[in-house]
Every structure is written in C-alpha cells, then in structure tokens.
Image (cartoon, rainbow, N blue to C red; front, side, top):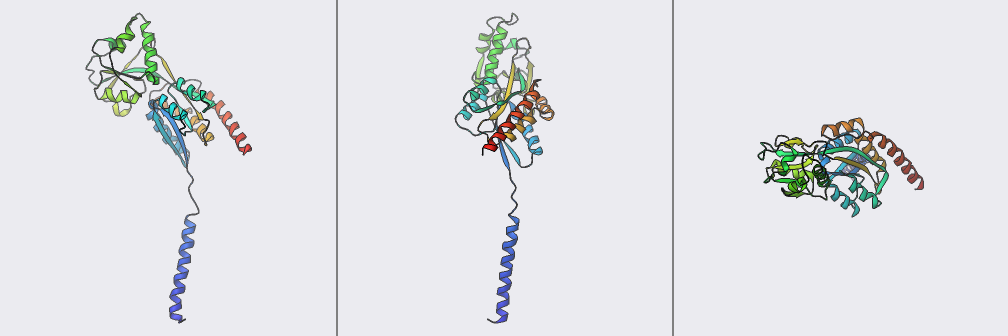
Length: 295
C-alpha cells in the first residue's frame, strides 16, 4: 500500500482507540444513590419537607421520597402492598392497624411528636367566631375531617369532652355537628377551604397553618380542659430494604435538629422521644446484623 495512503488510515485507527479508551474511563465511576420512601400524615407536610431536605444534606447520595395523605389512606396503601421504608401516622390507631397486619418493625415504633386541635377562621372572621362555644351557633358553616381521619376522630373526642363540661352543655356536640357543611379526607383540605372562604370555620391541628395561609386564616385556641392530645408514632416497615437508613431518618426526626423543625411548625415534643429512638436503634442494628449473617 502507498505510504501516503497508509498514514491517514493509521492515524484514524489510533484516534478511534483513544476515543474508546477515554470514554471508557469516564463511565467507570458511577454515583450510587439510595431512595428512602417515607409515608407521612398530611399534617406533617411542611415539617417533613424541611426535615427531608436537612436529612439529605447530611446524607450524601440519599433521596427522601415523601408520600403524604390521611393516615388512614396511608395505612390502607401499605396493607395493600405499597412499598415504603418509614410510616409516620397522626394517630396510634392507624399505626396499630399496620402493626396488626405484621407489616411494621414493632421495636422501631415510637411517638415522635404531639399536637392539639385548634379552630381556624377566614381572615376577617365573617361569622364572628371568637371561641369554641361559637361553633354551636345556628347558621355557622363548619368544615371538619371525616371521622375515619385522625383529625376527625380527635374532633369527635374533643366535642364529647366539651359536652360533659358545664360550660358547653350536653347538647353541644349535636349543635356543632349540625353546622358541618363538609368533611374532608385530610386536614390540608380543611385549611384550604377555610382560607378560600368556603366555610366560616374549620377544625384542624394547631400546627396546620402553613406560611402560605397565615395571611388568609386566623387561629383560635381550644381550652386544654376539653382539648385532646394527638400523638404521632413513627416506625420502620418490616419489608424495608433500607432498615438502617430508615432508623437514621427516625433518629434525625427525634434529634435536637429534627425537634427544632417540628417545634418551628407548631408541634409539641413528647419527653420520651429521644429515649425511644435510642432503644429502637439498638434493635434495628441487631436485626440488620442477624440478617447479614444469615445471607
């Protein structure tokens, strides 16, 4: 072959090898990422959004996928086979239903937050509601959660307590419920409807007024003598493939940094949260070690 013709062919061949070798070097280092799926009660939306961001910032390569809904909806999804690592409920009833189905790592379940009910009214307060007793006035349009939802169940408990209190009278529950114009499947919908003026008042948690609605609604407190304390349990699903990471997330939720976020959004912190987390950490670590040795 003519030398002048051979040299370009050789040069092209060398460049092809160089390109293949170089491109091969750039793909040998892949960034590993881990997704942690958290099913959380709708009332935790703002607090857990910030919690997830902080947890991701401290855990490189971890992405927290959050699924919010009413606790009863989440419990049903889990029992029907939905895949998740962590379940945070707004009540113990729905957590227990998942535990009874054998789907929770029971040693990991702990109360991480508490809450109280409160009344919200639209800015301007057209129905002139200033206290709990005003919800029984004829003509008031009240929006509450359905009784299957934790906030709806807590509302019924609170009204029952009030009806046994001489300040409100035995007929108080019936008078208030007669004013209900809508029942929602999660507390976020109650807040939205009251903010839009579709109801004169709504029954939500004390923590349920996000920044976006703070200029649109006013919060009216309910006396402790008739209010109820909502308890929020959190735990690891028994089918989780990331049990240790899930426990790390729970540890963060109950750490000083995580507690500060919950306080920021109006939650009450149970005194036993940190102790329960310490015990659960030991149990999960032991379980993971046993699983690893078995495989």
